[in-house]
Length: 264
Image (cartoon, rainbow, N blue to C red; front, side, top):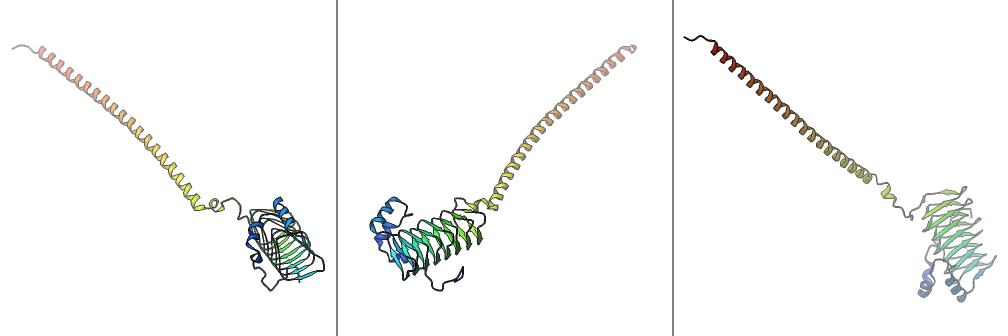
């Protein structure tokens, strides 16, 4: 099998469906490192071990934890912590997954964290709450929380997460999207809405300026009207005084003429 070989059989079925209802309700928590869960798992069953050189053909279901150093040809469903340093050819569902120098051909679903260490090759999709990837993954990575892509990581597939840290040297052939982040990117880049908002602001500003100009124009017109009326009044008064003066002068001249005429 090459670095990114393929498996013909579909091992993506939900193997957890075979567990009892009480087990799923009581054991499905985020991480085995929770003290209550650790005590419960320890009380129910010790960690199982698939030793190196041992090949298990068939599915594995358990409520405890398991360390795989050998080979499992089947789906693995554990409510505890799954540690893999061997080979698993099948889908994985566990509360927490840690793979180091492992070969996994199948989807990985972790209720808590998924850690893909150096030397690990995963052919399948990875779904988890948080993840650290330092190995090679051919598949989509869907992490509802933070993900760290270490410098030795090689990922062929899309990455979806809430936040991502990509260390220098990592190789990613796919898209990277922080679609679970608390940022509404659509509203930020809604150009039409932004443009309409700006147009409304400009229109309002223009209306205010126009109103100011109209007010100034009205004030100027009022002043001009008062000035014109004043000038007209002054001019009329001056004309009246001139006419009255001329009339008075004419009357005085007439009186003077009448006085100078000889009597018959």
